Amino acid sequence: MALIDGRTDDLAEVARAARAWHDGASLDDICRAAPFVHLTGRLEVPDGDPARLTESE
Image (cartoon, rainbow, N blue to C red):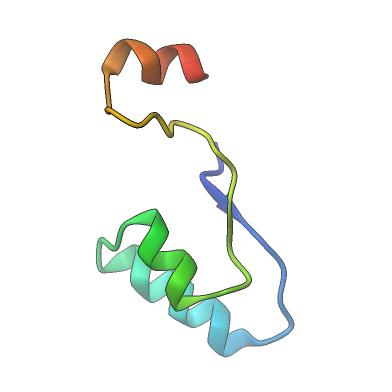
């Protein structure tokens, strides 16, 4: 279940995205660290309500 996706030929960008993910960065922070990354929109609800998270799937 992908939460982010993207394409780049720059392996340094891939490494930055992977490191941010590994370090527990938020999805928004990962996008800032690696501009090629795009959020898929999965499991994103504004209030984090578990019922709405389930509904988003």
